[in-house]
Length: 215
Image (cartoon, rainbow, N blue to C red):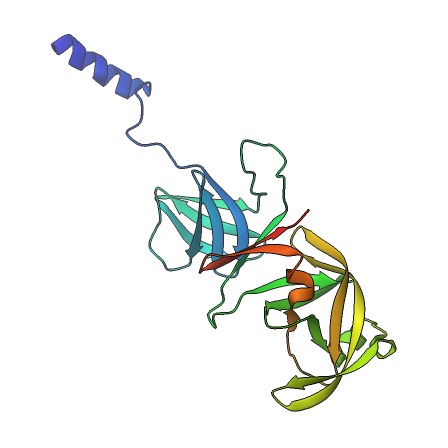
C-alpha cells in the first residue's frame, strides 16, 4: 500500500498524473459590445459582462474584434471563429448570431451595397427600410423607384421601392433585395425586414437570434 501511495505522489510531482478537471473547449462564434456567443464543449451559450460564469467560463470584456474570457480562473483573449458543426469540416449552411439589445430588439451591423449600416431586425417590416438621408449618402437613386405611401408614427409619408444590389450581415450576403426608402429622417436605423428575412431561417433563442441562409 505504501508503495502505491508513493507512486501516486511521484506521478503528481512529475506532472504525469491525470488532472482532476480538464479545461473546457471554448470557441467564440458571435461578438457584440459587452456580450458574446460562445460554444462551450459543443453547447452554445450567450455570455454578458458582469454575469456569473457558465461552465467555468466568464466574460470579462468584448467588442467587435475579440473577447476576454476567464476560463477556470485563467484569462484568455479569443477572436471570432466560424461555428463548425463537427471537427473542422466546412459548415453546410451560413449562420449569423445576433444578440438581443437592452431594449429587447435584435441589432447588428452589416452593409448595403458595400456601405456599412446599423440594422434592427423587424419582422413587421415588409422590406429593408431606410430614410432618404441615408439613401442619399449611399448614392441610391431611390426617386427612380416606384413611389408608394407609407404609414409611420408621424403619419403618411412618401416612399420609394427600390432594388438593393447587395445586403450583407456577417457571412450572409443576399442580392437583389427589395428596399423601401422613406422621405425624411425616419427610421433612424435600417429596418431589416422580410424581403431579407424571408430568405433565411430564423431561430429565436431568447437572448440570441440565429439566422441561417436557405440554399
